[in-house]
Image (cartoon, rainbow, N blue to C red):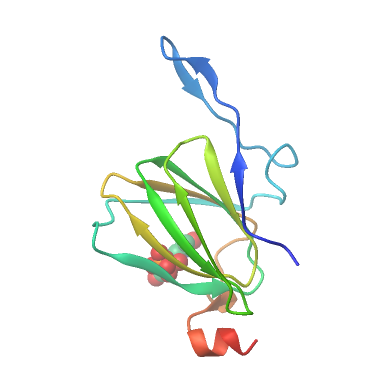
Length: 131
Ligand code: TYD
């Protein structure tokens, strides 16, 4: 069973020049990237997520700001992760219920293993736990 884990990437550069960080298939991303999306301007008081994915794998970055994740696996076990550095990501395996909170300046970048499929979402928490 795959577990959620932080991904630590290199940042190339210096404070004089600025930085570049690279996420690359097989180097540090464990799946073929088929979709990229980003979210921004999420108000502080809003909690998003509230779903799990049946098969989708994701690597998520806070390229700006701070993002807090609470993940729950199918056994009901909880883990929390804070992303607040553009060089640190979070790998989320399939079948993890997530709730996500954002600082207002947060920009969430998601690398996803598949195209958008509505049928891949589980939005009912009780149904999720019974899986
Ligand atoms: P959703 O994944 O539910 O985000 P959150 O859990 O943070 O609220 O997506 C929000 C809306 O955006 C939903 O109506 C589906 C739509 N959407 C797409 O059309 N394509 C995509 O690739 C994604 C990620 C979302």
